[in-house]
Amino acid sequence: MKKIALLCIVVAGLSASGIEFVSNSYQERVVKDESGKESIKLLSATKVLPGDTVIYVNSATNKTAKTIDHVLVTNPISEHMEYVAYSAQCSTECTILFSIDGGKSYAPAAELFVKQEDKMVLAKPSQYTTVRWNIDTVAPSSTTDVTFRAKLK
Image (cartoon, rainbow, N blue to C red; front, side, top):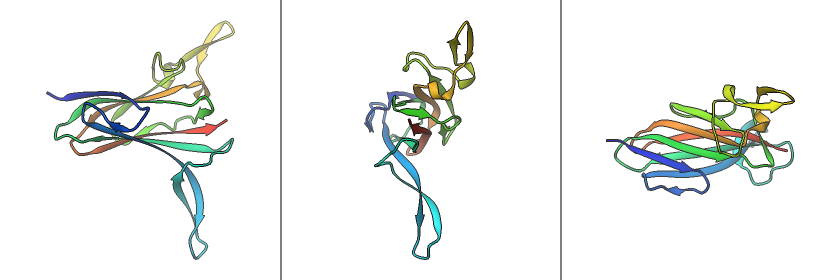
């Protein structure tokens, strides 16, 4: 019998299921080496200015000797941030869902509708309030990363 993990990413730590969660935020920065050659590096997001994009990385590591199925990772999007369209990713097989009501309900992006005037229209990525990943499986002693980008308003 396989374990099932359910956790909302709020703080990092080891869940009762044996999954350890770590959450980090980064920014892409252009850096120069000694010869003046430029490259793009991921650096911790320590000072974010309006218009800057932050890359959120949530890592789920299976600390057990058994495969854990259906690991649920939920990441709220700060009210000061705006989700960047098509940026949510998963390093393994998973389903990515979004919420536009603060995490009360979730659906794929193509199924999120809001009322505009007298009709229902597809929600814009800027209206997303939460990203959720349902990771199919996390193998023993392995890590799955889930990521998304958001821009500071």
